Amino acid sequence: MSMAIVSASHINKWGNSQGVRLSKNILKQLHWQDNEQVTIHYSSNQIVIERTQSLLEKLFANYKNTEYKPSEIDWGEDIGGEKF
Image (cartoon, rainbow, N blue to C red; front, top):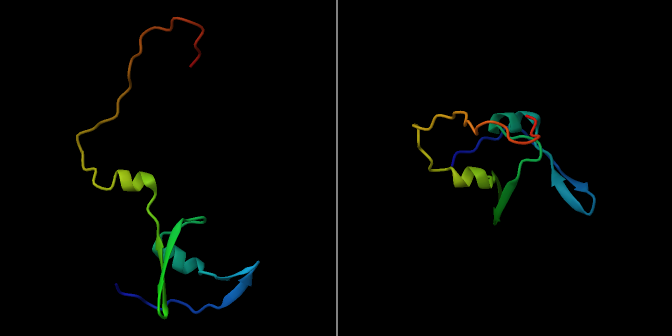
């Protein structure tokens, strides 16, 4: 894993906890959005923050079907008071 020091930050009080702010530039380079779910690993003198895959990303991680083509389905004539 290669790492680059992009910017410095401070540990600041945030309610009853402490927090570190990530710059907009770092988030942009990682293609991360607001409220992104992350996993935090730590050992000795190091903290690693990784983006957590969503359930949908996990389910379709190995999906490679390129033959599917979406199409409309004709359900026949309306038989009631349906309005579409």
